Amino acid sequence: VVSVCIAADKESCQQLFILRRIMGKSKEDEAIFMDFCSFPVDEYRALANGTAEDRAKATRPLSTVSTEDVLKVTEMSFLEETACVLLMAFGVPNGVFTFPALVYLVGRFIVGNVKLTAGIAVALLLPLAIMPQKFVPSSLQSWLAIQVVKYFSYRMVIEAVPEAKGRQRIMVAPPHGVFPYGNILAMLAYKTLCGITFRGLAASSALAPPVFKQILRSIGVVDASRHVARKVLERGESLGISTGGVAEVFETNENDECILLKVRIGLIKLAIRTGSDLVPCYLFGNTKLLSCWAGEGLPRGREILEYISRKVGFALIIIFGRFGLPVPRRIPVLGVMGKPIPTHHMQCEDPTPEQIKEVQDKLIDEMQGIFDRYKGLYGWEEKHLIIK
Image (cartoon, rainbow, N blue to C red; front, side, top):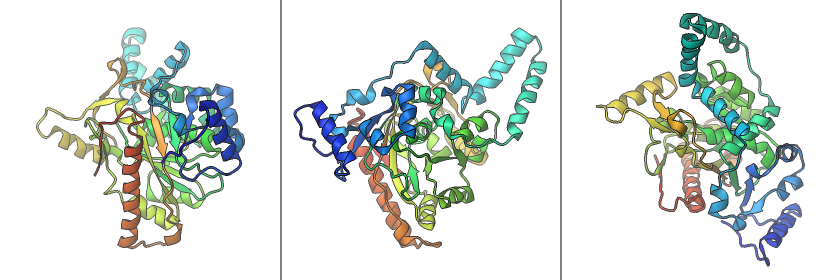
């Protein structure tokens, strides 16, 4: 769905596109591209707080974008990259593995008393577990947040730019992968794209541990419970969700992409009950950032681990990536935001099975369409999307 921009060269093509967007004459089916990694820190922040015209000028028509543009790894200084590696090594979700190891090493070789060191660590973390953490919108444009966007060379294709005063949205953005880094990147970059923010959903088990809670809640993540999600939408805010959750983690090792969407009718009901638009999205590359061992090689290993993981609310797996550690690889992530599927015309408290099926069929068709349209741009011509 990329319109052809007729111009003498790439520069004039882009100027024509920008002019048409500013004048409100952009074709409905013309996708645009934003490279968040190309902006200096000050410009990134200025776009987030600037005008729609400023942000339009920072985009490119997709007809001028190549696979090389999408897969180029953004250069970073040693300080910038080290800061990101440390954040992701000891933050969400890898801190579950690395922080206890760090406490043990410090206690064993520096303090000389592991129990004392562990006690001090617990005493320091306990207040963080108790204290509430509010959403801090400015954290989305912090120096460290911008470096995380650069670390993953995050870029976006947008088929329909969200309006600041438009209807609230539920952005359905698979795949989950071992961890939904792509969804977090979208949260960090969304304001630079369209001047507004949205809330992400996460299991309560991910929001409870100290440090995890501070990181996730400060950037706008809320509990994935039904009443919390509905409350966010009813006050006019948009939501982002990775529908596969824990179950989809166990699909990460497949050669083709696999997402769980057909059985997820709860989000369809939520959209209809609140009159929210459903927006199909896809995060190319998210499944390749980390690898995992999920019981392969053991009799019924995967089945048992998946069952326990569902019960506790997080995946009981061994994860590894860069350097063989639980640090995500520097693989570019391409987010694609499709066109919204409206539900406001059928808004009601008790949607019928026919209404649910109508909306779900549209969502599944659009999700498949997005993958097929843009997999070549990401260099995945031979890959297929399996929707379960």
